[in-house]
Image (cartoon, rainbow, N blue to C red; front, side):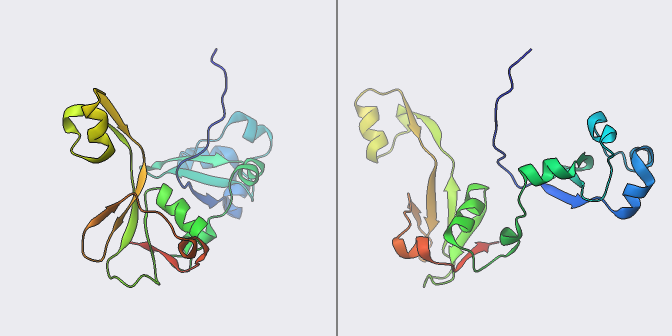
Length: 179
């Protein structure tokens, strides 16, 4: 049997509370009527009950399962700050960025400016057009790994590759999600 390892979640989970009615109706009715999966251990511990949560697969909303209250409390934190679309601290905005969102500062002067993550890649030396990648290719490196980085769409429509936050950017709380 394989060894268990620890993994960190990379996406925001979609959950809702178990209702009082669901808790009163119990496991068998919940399974029969809703097809929500509940583990045997959770049933032994009295689930479904108020305080438990129902999770769903964001890609398939029919795929739902019960998350016991204690497991939920130990492993999830409310993302109320991410439900806001503006007035975010840099750390909050960075988490949104890392999950694939686009962010910008209200205080930026240019219209249409935003940041996004560019996932890294590996290119063949023939694909290296310039910069460090071209130097590596010219030195005989066959495969060149380009790391993840933050890009900015500038006010003039150009892309700034490898954007870096200033002290002001990191301490500001006027970040917002860009749709």
